[in-house]
Image 1 (spheres, helix red, strand yellow):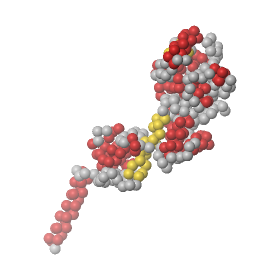
Image 2 (cartoon, one colour; image 1 turned 90 degrees about the vertical axis):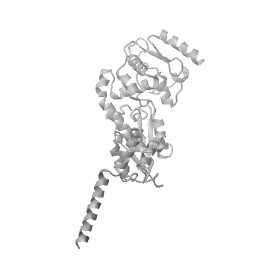
Image 3 (cartoon, one colour; image 1 turned 180 degrees about the vertical axis):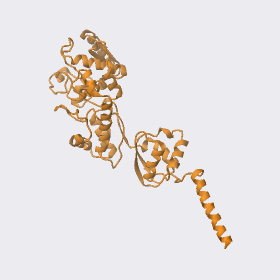
Image 4 (cartoon, rainbow, N blue to C red; image 1 turned 90 degrees about the horizontal axis):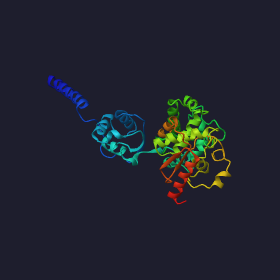
Amino acid sequence: MVVVVFGGTVAGVGYFGYQFYQDRFGAAPDYAGGGTGETVTVEIPKGALGNEIGQALKQAGVVKSVDAFVAAQSQNPDGKSIQAGAYLLHKEMSAESAVEMMLDPKSQNNVLVRPGERNKAVYKAIDEQLDLSSGATEKIAEKNFKSLGLPSWANDDSDIKDPLEGFLYPGTYPAAKGMKPEAVLKAMVTQAANKYKALDLEAKAKALKLDSPLQVITVASLVQAEGKTADDYRKMAEVVYNRLDRANPETYGMLQFDSTFNYLKGESNINISESEINKNQDPYNTYTQKGLPPGPIGNPGDGAITGTLNPTDQGWYYFVAVDGVSKTEFAKTHEDFQKLKDKFNESTGN
């Protein structure tokens, strides 16, 4: 009897001792191999640390333990570069396999909004990523734009073609099968609203003598469409502000930007005939209508917004991409502008 009791005690101590050792020094529970055939989408929020990523994966049934994932991530030289987004992974993967798969761009289910990209291109990308019929996201945007978190000052002109233009902020957003387009769009709009709020655009608009925060975004979208570098953006912004002054001696309030005409046509054309432009009376045609277009013509990025808020003060009224592509030069008088046009014609063969 004593031997039996003593033996049971030793067994109990041994078991709990083993558990104690495993908890502190043993390998964390882990699956083996690349997982089952069942796939699952896991969304990783921005700023998530290794243990938070591990928790999301464990809850989705991808990895067996958070500790196994954290260990595998630390052992992979690129492990810390796992970014926010939606990932298509397998269930019951080894932590090592999960890390490797998350680092493979093929597993990342995201939509990228590029600086200056128009909403129509973003809608198309969302349709493709979510495997929706063409035009589905655009229809939802038209119908539900009021519920997506736009600032109160947005959509302040009845002639605006797309209330969400300028509010799908450039960046990378989760977008995987099963997600609703509204969720993807709302993430973009929320990012824009937060960015614009942090910049205090209402105060900035007054300082720049603009009528509303929306006009700040509209200027930034023009700057983004026409400029190429940080220096371009600042000069381009000055061109806009100088031309908006209806008493200016050069253009008397006419912006005359090809980018606004291209927007209303849904094109990107650098060779537009004067007759085509002059007979078009659309509110977005800044050759026939004075002042800014009713709303943004794209989604400006950080660089263009910074340039818009910090314009140069050197007397610029004109600019020409003299090589037809990327090299922009600026002028203060119409005479100098004509010289730049001649330079453009020579380089492009016009």
